[in-house]
Image (cartoon, rainbow, N blue to C red; front, side, top):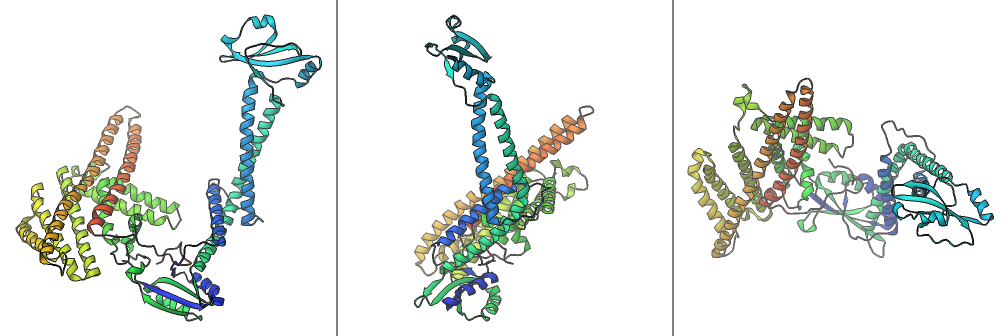
Length: 600
């Protein structure tokens, strides 16, 4: 259900405006109507600070362990952030220095440690020591006769050698020269160890300070979000009467109006309200029972409806639950999904995550139901169990195929009925009759066509011609009430053509339920067969059987759940929403002061 909204306008003196806004934020019920998208310097700076603290939190959470404890600190949040940024810069500098040093060490390692004092002594004596390297096949033996050469090292296909000569003597040798760095290999390695220790110290700082920093940054983010929301709301006011009067508008659910009026009566605010109009595009707040509320995240993944639309969540909920179970098609898998949601609820206390875990449990229940209907429990045929056999309604793959189509027909028909109801609500009773006639025609056509699939609709079959005639007449004569009858008939024929072809096209989409359910069952059967073959191996056979069953069915659960999540969503958003005439997107209701909280 979409909550009914009221549009409130507040008028007050500019000197009272900020105090009023502060109290309105504490109330947390009014969705501020935006009058401008301009951003003040303060708003931009606050947004920048929020990003900085958010990124810091994401980084710090990687360093928290189960044994981490928050230690008291005298630093403020800004001081801690500054220290953290300084550590980041220092770590980047050390990493860069470490990489340069590692390259210098790798280049110097083939030459080993040189005594720089000895080299300086040789230089003072008029001698010069040059270092060269080349490939082994490129090294010429005559160089040994021409110069004083000492091989230093030989690694791979390269040879490293030193050549001693007088400074004034020219050297002509076709090899790559190497210049010694200012520091020896030992000194470079010591420096490398020092840098490594400094990097470890920085990591230790992250581990030790992350719990306290997370607490500081979380509290600071709450303050900044509060300030950002306040400043953004402040910009939405419209000054009048030479800036002496401030005007602010906002939306509030009619259900919460009494709380707002109690608040307004305590201040000196002039206000008035009007009922929401569709053309004003009021924000959308869904209010459903406990079961439908579980599936609200599914619908929101697509979009929220317009204000004058129907909330389709209560209608998509049972279908999505059954479609998910159909695609998984195994009662054992449903038990695992339910237990997984239950286990994660014990571990995860985040209130934003728990609704999704409840959704997993609900989808697990749907999988148990559909798995029982099709007689699968971890790919074992439940019909082989004598006391369960009579309770399994579906006996073969043909019935599974027909069942998928039946569910498709039901959802399409429900969608068309909802479309008719919506048109009656929006434009008047007569304007929905053509859509209702189309529903009757499609339903009669589906009953007539069910005989081709081996179904026996019984006494319903004799009524289908009347239903088709009635539906056809309603579409041809009532599709545009008040217009010329011949235009109505012509338009009705076009509507019928699109409806019939569209119906069969939509219906074929539901074959994916059959395909996914059967493929999951077949893969599970293959896993059981292969595991049984491992099980006959002496001694370790039972262990291999258990391991293969756990691994194989675990993978199959993951694969089938992925398909079972995506494909029913496609059937919901395309086939069901299209037949229901859904339109959006609506604007989400975000009350000033509680934009991150769920409104009950």
